[in-house]
Every structure is written in C-alpha cells, then in structure tokens.
Image (tube, rainbow, N blue to C red; front, side, top):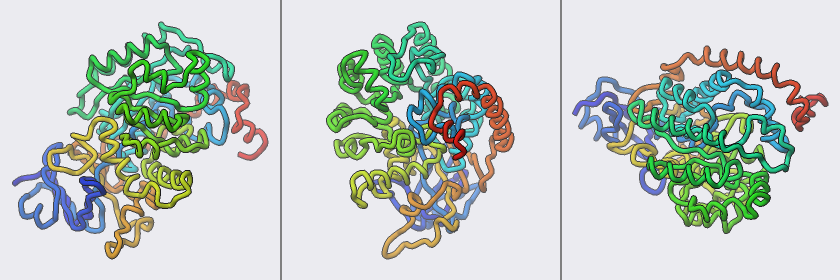
Length: 475
C-alpha cells in the first residue's frame, strides 16, 4: 500500500494502553493528514511503500504535545511579573493598558513558534483578540482549540484598588461575547479541521450570573466546551464571597456549570471536597504547574483530582508569569512539585506527566478521537526527538528503559528535530518551514520597546515587588 511518508527504525511511543506504548524498533506510515499504521519496522516496511522515508535510528517518535491552556496574546510581557505579590493587578494590568492589539499579535506569534519548536502541536489558546490571533495558527500550520476571553471588566480595571469589588459593565460583556460567537462562526472547523472553537468566560468572579448562564446556553447550542479559570487564586475567592456569599465551585455547581463541557483551569484555591466535586461532575482540570508555582507559590490539587477519578491535562499558561510556553518544562514541574507536596518520590511518575501532555490532555479537551496517541486513523500529529543529544544520552533499554524519565526530567525541548501536524512537516531539522522565525522575533522586540516606553509611569505607580527590586539594584 502507498503512503506519503514512513518513519522507521525509531523508538516509538504510541501512548496507547495504560502506559506509554513503547515500540523499540518501530515505524509510522502516514497518508495525507492521517496515520495509516503504527507498529514494528519490519511489519510496516513489509506492507507499505512511501514517497518519502525518514530513517529514525537514534530518534524517538511520539505524539505531538498538547498545551491545554495558554494565553499567547500576553506573552509580549515575558519575564515582567515574577517574584511578586498581586501578580495580575500590579504586574500584568499596568502593561496591558499600554499595549495595542498589533503588539499583542506580535508576541503571540513568537509564543506559538516557541511552542512548536519544543514539540507542541496543539494549543488551547484563550485570550483577547482571538479573531486575529487565530490567523497565526492557520498560517503556521498548528492545531488550535481557541476561545475569546469574555468578561464584564472595564478597560481601566487596573485602577481598581486591590481587594475592592470589580465593577461590571454588561455592555462590555456582550461585546466580548459577540467576539467569541464571531470566532466560532468564522473559524470553527477551518484549516482542514485544525481550528476548533470554545467559549472562554474568564472566571466566575469577572462576570455576572446572567452572562455566565448565557455562555453556558451558547456552549450547549454550539455543542462545544467552556474554557474557564476556576478557583484560580485567593483574589477570585475573595471576590466571590464578597459578591455572592459563597466560593467559586459551590456557586458554579448551583448554576449547573460543573459538567463534561467545562475545562476548569487551575483549581488553585479549591478545597479537597471542592476538587472531588469537580471531578465527580465530569469536568476536566487543566494543571499549569510552572505558572501557579511562580505566581502563587502553590501546587494545585491535581493529585486529589486524579485520585477522585477526574480527567486532567497540563498547560503552560502565560509567559509573564511562567516565562515560557514549553511543555517539557511543564511535565518536569508537574512531577517534581507533586513529589515535594506529597513528600513522596513515587508520586507523579514520568509516564504520568507524559500522558497528561498527550493522550490524557486530548481527552480533557475533547479531541482524543483525533489526536493524543499514535493510532491508525488518527491525525498525523507527531514529533521526532533526537535521542543522541547530550541531554538524552545514553539510552538504556535493559533492564530498565530510561527514555521516558529522561524526556520528563532532562529534556529541554530543543531536542525536538521534526514536527509534523496534520500530516504536514512544519519543522524540519529545527527549521520552521511556514513562517520567518527571525522576522517574528524582530517584530516582537520592536513591540516590546514601544510598550516599555508607554508603561513606565504606570509601572512606577503600581510599585510592584519586581519594580522595587529594579530600583534597589537587584535586577
């Protein structure tokens, strides 16, 4: 049988079954956008011929990584809000108010490039201006599950004193919701189905009950999911108690929000009982280890969620707090932080981290029929990793295989050599084929230079911890 591409003689992680599905001398055959077959090299080469052949000796083939929660539009502020309190109010908002949509777009493209170069093939992007950001995904060739951020907060929310109740403006909420509807109607299913759309209420503390219920009804109408921050910090819980007299998760449960449509992001402040309730109701949890560790100094209750039978995934979140959008970074953080939290080195093994960035993530975002594992009939989204890079050397296969632990605890992402999405080679030998990487970086730097000039007074007025470190000569 004829194939377009065969990769053979490689270590193959299928992610099928209960573990990683290792095939030590494996091969993958691809036709169009679909995987024709996966198996032993001898079997695949005996049954298929291809126009292009890649010798995978010394390489690993695995499903592309899935970033289940990312805000690519604020990546232009990378590294500007770490090591501080009141991250959103004092760190993020003073920059956001001084940033144009064009500047956000410039930063977004660089983040997408960064993710692809580190093996991410699917991005769950959740931000303002998504009707334009989504064009990057179409151009680059990535798979994306996108949502417009919806809230009722005025543009000058940064002036709101820390701890004061947020003012809501229904007109703002309706305008942003219409942008999300427009995104869905114009982009859902585009780019050969690579682009799919969700609804993106920012959080239960940032919009009225009426708007939350309207979003829920629309998700049912369009038969899609809801991507939303839930119990993401003490700030949110404080807002909810002041406004409604109850915490986020009990409030959402009363509204009927806790079901299989909900992708609940963070759960940072959820109690054990609340975490178990979210799992029991069938909502998925997106765990952003690096971001919440840096921003809040906390480890969200992902282990409690998994132990309650919940479906979880990993996400990178955003570069202002996390500094990077690299899923190898997230896999490592997820494993190590939970070992420390439980004081048990056996907790959160490497294979679990890898599953939560591939097949379990695909289940959590509702795409497991298409991606997340290497299986006949699934989309051809996969990456080739050079196992002969120093960080992954040496290779042991007996009496213990060390490939998966090294991927999680040692790899940096730069070991990714080739990226294939929807059957198309997007990166070949570390070179992106669909966009000009250097031009994108130049444009982002020009945008950052402009933002820094306009933001100076607002940052000084916010007196954030990191600004004070700069003033005191530590940075």
